[in-house]
Image (tube, rainbow, N blue to C red; front, side, top):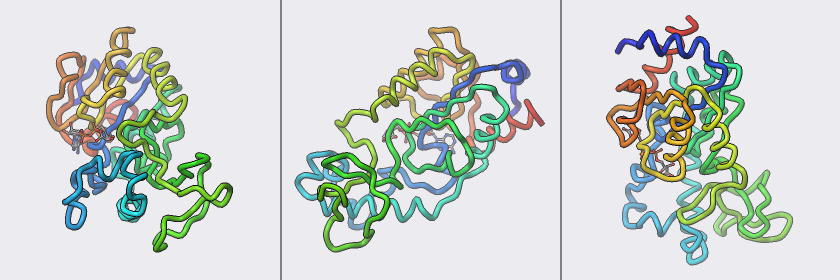
Length: 244
Ligand code: APR
C-alpha cells in the first residue's frame, strides 16, 4: 500500500490533528473484543448481563469476575507498532489529540500523552457509590471488594451500555474534532455513537478525513484518504513517509 503524496504533504504541514481509534488498533496486540472474550463459561451470557448497571445491581460478583478476567488479559498485552506510530505522531505534530474507544490503556503505555478515553479504562477500578478511583483492591477475593472511603462496591472504571460518557470527555473530543486540520478514523467500525459523529463534525468544519481500516465502513464515502489494511502496518509506514 502506497501512502498518497498529498497525504504526506498535508501531514508535514498540519498543526492540529486528531485520531479516533477503535478495537482494530488493539487487535494486533491480541486484545480480544468484548464478543471475542465471551468464550467458555462467559458464552452463555448476553452483553447486557455483563456490562450494564442493572447487571451489576443484580449480580455484582458475576460482573466483577468478568472484568477481573479481562483485566488480567489486558495486563499481559503490549502496544503494537500502530500504537507506537501514533505516539510518534504526537511528538511530531504540534497539537495531536488521541480519542479512543478502547479501554486497554495501550496508547498511554506506548507513550501517547494527550488521550481522551471515551469509554474509560479497564485497568482502573472505581467505587459504584462515591465514584472515587481505588488505588488497591483484592483482585480475586470471594466477595466483590469494597471502597476504602465509603464501603460501596467497587466496579470497573468503564462505560457500560446505557451509561453516560465520562464528564467532559465528549465535549473535549468534540472540540478537538471541530478544530483540527486532519482527522484520522482508525480501526473503528464508525457505527457506535457518539464517537462516530466526531468524524462528521471534523469534516463539516473543513478537516481532511483519513480512514485506516481493514475494510470499508459507513465513513468511507466521506473520507479524503482511505488506507485499507492493518493499522499496525500502515501507521508506521505513514510516519516513516512523512518524517522518516
Ligand atoms: N487494522 C485496522 N482495522 C482493523 C484491524 C486492524 N488490524 N482489525 C480490525 N479492524 C477494523 C474492523 O474492520 C472494524 O471496522 O476495526 C473495526 C473494529 O470495529 P468494532 O469491533 O465495532 O470496534 P469499535 O469501532 O472500536 O467499537 C466501538 O463499541 O463494542 C463497543 O464499547 C465498544 O468501544 C467499543 C465500541
